[in-house]
Image (tube, rainbow, N blue to C red; front, side, top):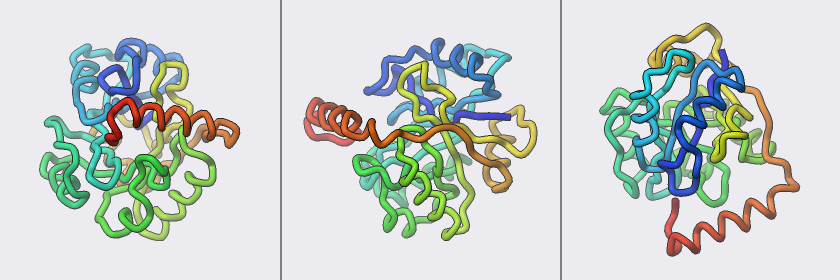
Length: 220
């Protein structure tokens, strides 16, 4: 089964995708499930779960802006505060029974970087992100191997037409969020999909700088 484990909705400050649009896009892409990982908010995840759709599995979560970079918090049901140190953020995620994943660790604007990722006890590493370049994704995969950590993958979609562009392929059928988490931690899954083309890097950088200026020099 294919799962996009990193999707944003209008509950993130940098996306206009309605939750309903995202879920319909998941079905069109043939996904078995999706993790709605809005920035510092469980609003999109909670709303998606409230719809009680039977055609798409929702894995609850959020993308937390720690003091050093972004961390994916899976299977949490209470919001994790932003701007805390990495270790404290990981502890709060685990206190809810969730898992903490280093998001796109080599991304300049929001990744934790290799040193910080290695220095903290993450449950897994995001190794395939459709908004990251192939080289950064390959570095993330090598990092996961060297740290003996399992991996996740997702589109990091901010608009419906990019949902499912990168995905996690489970090693077995999963019909609950807990089963997906267990499959991730088993390390037996795989990843697929696209990477951000190098030709898009300039436009992506300009977009990030513009958003950063608009937020008053504050990290998303």
